[in-house]
Amino acid sequence: MLNIIWPAFIVISIIYAFLSGNIENVSNGLFDSAKSAVELTITFFGTICLWNGIIEIVKRTTLIDTLSKALKPVIRFLFPEIKNNKKANEEISMNMVSNLLGLGNAATPIGLKAMETMQKENPKKDTLTNSMAMFILINTASIQLIPTNVIAIRSSLGSKEPSSIILGVWVATITAAVVGITAAKILMKRF
Image (tube, rainbow, N blue to C red; front, side, top):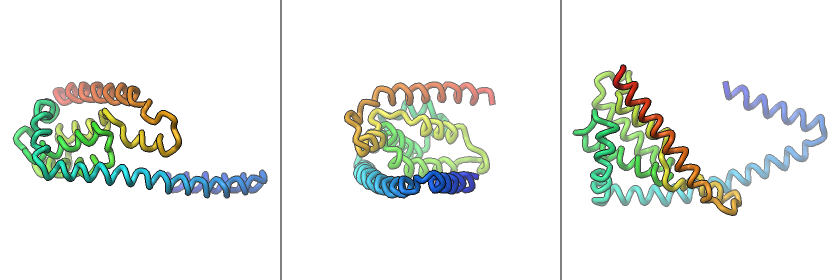
């Protein structure tokens, strides 16, 4: 559906710009937008490479075991079905740490691996387990202590205080996580 709506908007905008004599503004806007997109991509690329490298180093050291042990009580509460699966616990821990650092793009590959690991133990392959549903919820709420990607975007767009959103991000993500986890735990008991 969107592959019909967006091209329609673009065609209508170009026709309107042509009829109103603003076609030059549309042309300038296209090139300015392309330039901004490339600059933003380069900024993101650097940030993603840095944090993916750090995550890879963490995976190869004993730090992953330390993080897994620190998050064990939280993971046991959120994911009681996988308490004996060390690999799933490690992948979930890395995903949660990546999200806490605001590295949604770095957390995605680890999150996909965690879902694959949980799917292997899923007795009904066409239905999510409670742990899988909770994992999706945790990733959607994505509690972030340092919203790295958002700060990078704000910085690349010339914000004078790119990190001024941290308090708002804390409130929003913690509230979303608490409400989501509470609702999920209640619904898991009923169904």
